[in-house]
Image: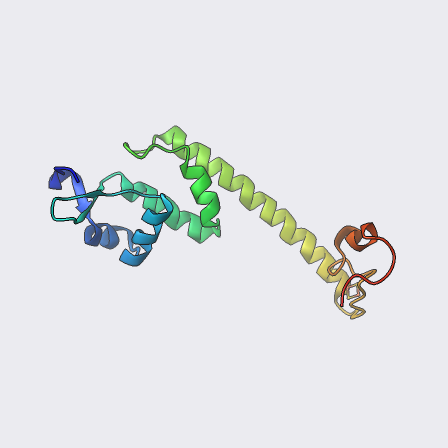
Length: 147
Ligand code: FES
């Protein structure tokens, strides 16, 4: 516990109100180590003001469909004791853009495969590219592989 300056920190209620994130979610993010809080002598959580930026980034990540495990990885490089710099944010957003790009390419590929299936209906384990992408079953040798 520390002697925390109330003018330079926010209560969990204030953080929840500013970010729109539920208190329970803030507790969870804290458990994951994505954010951190100090405790007052009365055992109340106090968040440094710059934590709002980290929480905003978690909100953005959720909106982009970035899993929390990826957020954890990105946050490992961000400072806990100060507001992340523009360059810190640039690194994180560049990584996430690459993730989104990969996902977009994957969705496009799945779309193409699905187009090939529309009107087919064979659902063949051997030849349907949705069921057997890149003929992975062939790598397992001849004979049935799935029930
Ligand atoms: S259902 Fe026939 S190729 Fe996918």
